[in-house]
Image (cartoon, rainbow, N blue to C red; front, side):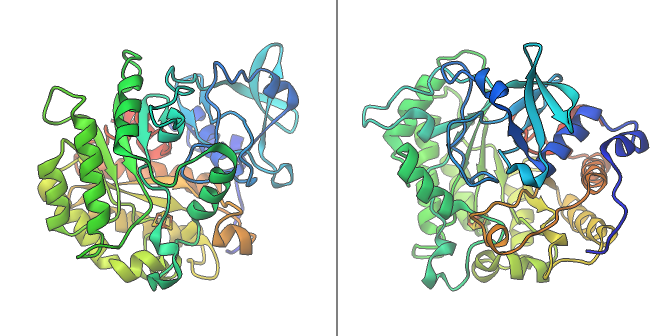
Length: 419
Ligand code: SF4
């Protein structure tokens, strides 16, 4: 990357006055990460607050020790920033006058809050599994991860895991430290959902995601079959044919995704392309490139709109990876042009794009082998505005993946402000 001048937090918020300040703070916390003082951790009560460790991906400091899962800002915005080594200059969360505060270089920036732990979290299923390891929670969404292993990581996959991803290394740590099963049973999921739904009014949606599994008669048939079984088991808990469920999965063939749609109550679909730009995608996501391919991934997203409808299909990008040497573009201007033009190509066909801030993790290829510098705050602010503006231009809603459902995308958080 060229050494473009990077604006400070205050300079960015002054330059973009219509962009919510707390949302800019969220983005910056995702960029830089967070660290907790001992005083802040003394306010963390594991019987009341949601602890981390159950997420499919790991932390920036590579540790799983009991700490807050994430934070909420005063306007209800979720901040899903993971504990980050102090030498990487994270925001510091401190306890000041009995209030949990986000601080930077000793200056208090704003108040923040730990997430409330769901009532079901510490209970066990009849098989003995800890329920939070079967279904974890965003504040208002249940998050089911049926399979935490990604087969692109196996030596004979002919591809390879995505270079920013630490899923398999994180699973190894989770297995050792928190009784995390690699693959959960349908009975465990059903029992956990039953228990979670007893907390009336808390959860608005269910999301499913897993590592990719290319095995089967046709590639990915096994992954498809498992999702159908799980979604059917969850669907039995609802009185309606369809229920608010988002499937986040490999880009399946049209026939496969139709099979899922026709045999379950799923209502929205996410095929994460991860990285825009074919040559960068090929280098950074070799498993996806080999088993599906970039153009085919985009085509399958558009095909899925025919089944799910417009505003029911989206794709996620790990924004910032497109800037990473040696595969990425050379400047942020080039990066924004690439991301927004590819997103527009999809938006024309009824597909939304959402971004997460790339948070390099030590268990990933990039995190372990490169000291990457991620994009500037202004880059992410402009990208978030651009992605939400595309939704407005093409009349797309993102209500299945917004601040109340996922909470990890600044651009879809904007949907409640930019309408
Ligand atoms: S497909 Fe890529 S991002 Fe998804 S779990 Fe596998 S390696 Fe990670």
